[in-house]
Length: 266
Image (cartoon, rainbow, N blue to C red):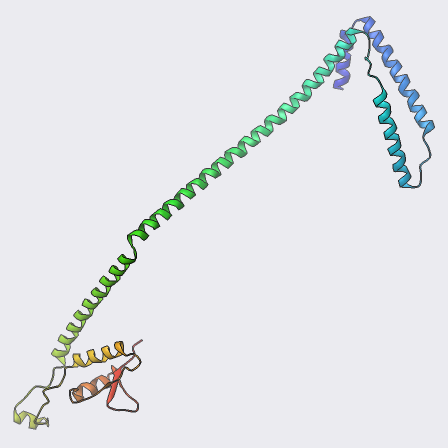
């Protein structure tokens, strides 16, 4: 409808002589088209049953049409300059309309690409921030690694061992004080008191304290864990040994009653 309206407007702008000439040209073209259509209908062969023959015929017809178009010399639509001018204007208007559509599509595509570019730039900035954070973390770990070198680790471990040793000595001193207060070594008493309590007359002066017995048991377990038993002799006061066995602190050897070891508490 737009083309018809544009053609009508173009025809209205032509002079009467140009309009009559244009009408004559149109009638000649329509008559020639009608003649060619009739010839095509009359010359159309019967439909072949074989699809291969149909393809060959189409190929031959296309080749002949191509050769004919190549041999045709271009000619003007009309000799009247007024008609050519209006036809040129009409083609230019169509071309401008097509170009406007192309420009609109290009602008839409440009806006889409711009939006995609902004998203990609935002994603790139986020990745850069992540990379910077990772590099900072790596640098911090490197500095910490240099700070805590092998020598520093050794010194730190040595200091911890010394601290634990001091703490163990304090514990042993506290344990010795408690045992000395609540489980002291037997002391010499008067003859009457010893007779009354049925205690032997002589007390071995080489007896070791309960804290020393515990220390011997612990050192034996630490130094020779494969053989944690110690042999009882005259320096071990029997009541101390019996108390350790009774309260589950020490265990007697199954085959030798004169050997004991520290109970396993873990």
